[in-house]
Length: 297
Figure 1 (cartoon, rainbow, N blue to C red):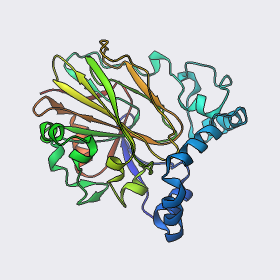
Figure 2: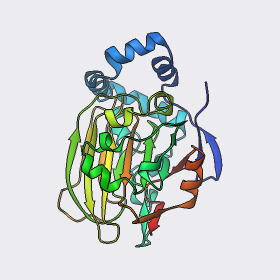
Figure 3: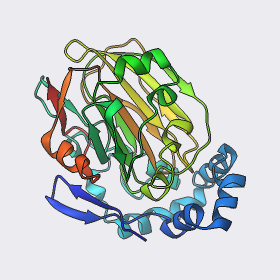
Figure 4: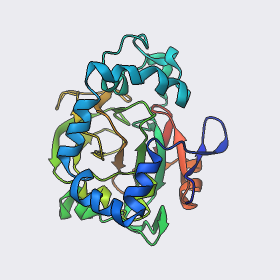
């Protein structure tokens, strides 16, 4: 099976992803018996809610320290002591110290909304390859609104994929005034490349949320969150209609891997060169929330 490789902006090195639950993922999405299990149980919201409840029990807290050690997380970044989490889920959607994720101060920049592995495309309607050549985004299905999709068809699209090992709070990429969040219901397939290489459509059939952020410099920016297997909750923590600063917290994912998508109106933003160069090779760029995703066009 092909390894998942990404370019780490912070180290300057091409790295191989340590996939949490890799054996189960490859069985579910690559084995006929796994596919039956996927359709019968794994994709269904009740499975993720059940697993989320399991990760919220006091007994699950015993998983925290081994997880930190296995994946090399830095507890000095955590806002709370690593011993204080009462469940694995509480650790999973932990807050970080502000100093751990400084926000790019340039008023002409937009920042990544989450820690993760990112793909950036200058025209949403011209995406030819995502994980596998020939897979295109179905923007009307993704947004659940054909008129809105037409408005953003020639704008930039950034897909940010979070792994279970990542910090799981998501933030606003630029200052503005956010509207209410619209939820589109759906199943909860994995959004790991192991799954997306088989079927990119999981991104626009999974449960997802849409928020419009009105800004002075970048027009109206669409901020989306995509649910996934074992993500029982997409929790919004912001207040609609209240102004937010760039990098302000928008919400968090409960247990599981997941993704965000950011969409810009045409001609509003120029994406960073390392994001474009790697994406053109179908290689994700690892970068942390608060670092530059692009700048005003």
